[in-house]
Length: 168
Image 1 (cartoon, rainbow, N blue to C red):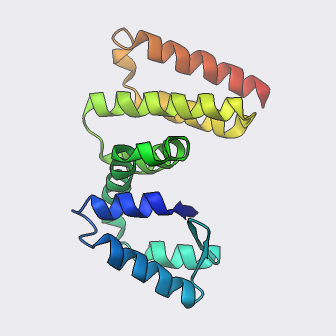
Image 2: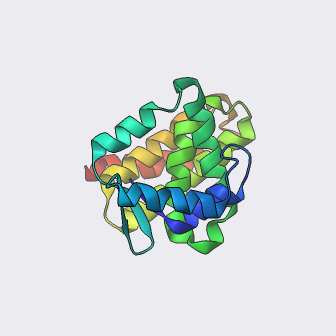
C-alpha cells in the first residue's frame, strides 16, 4: 500500500476520526520512516514490509475498520482535485471495504458507479482482472429489485462484466 501526501493531508484535514493536525501526522510519518517502518520516497509513503502493514492494521479494532475505510474514502473523494487519477482507485478501494456499513441505497448506487469508472480506467490500462473485480463489486452493491430505476448502470455493469470475464 502506497500513500501519497495528498491522501495524508486529506485525512488530516477531515478532522473527525483522526483528530490530528496535518503537521503532527507528517511528523509521525517521518518518525516512522526514521525507524524503518515506512519508506518515504518523493511524495509517497509505503510500509517497509507487508508484515508491518498487517501489524499496523491489526491494531485497528475489527468493529471500527469499515467505518474507518468509509471515512478515508470520503475524505479522499472530497479532496480528489489534488490528484483525481490516483484518487479514483483509492476512493473505490476504501469505500468498497467500508460498504458493508452502507445502508442507504443511493450511496450504494453511487459506489457502484464509481466501481464502473474504476473498471473503465482499468480496462484502458489492459488490466482485465481488476476491471472484472470492480465490475463484480459494482454489481453486488446494487439491489437487484431496483434494476428498472438504474437500468443504464445495471446494463453497463453487466455488459462490461461479461466482456471483462471473456478477456480473462
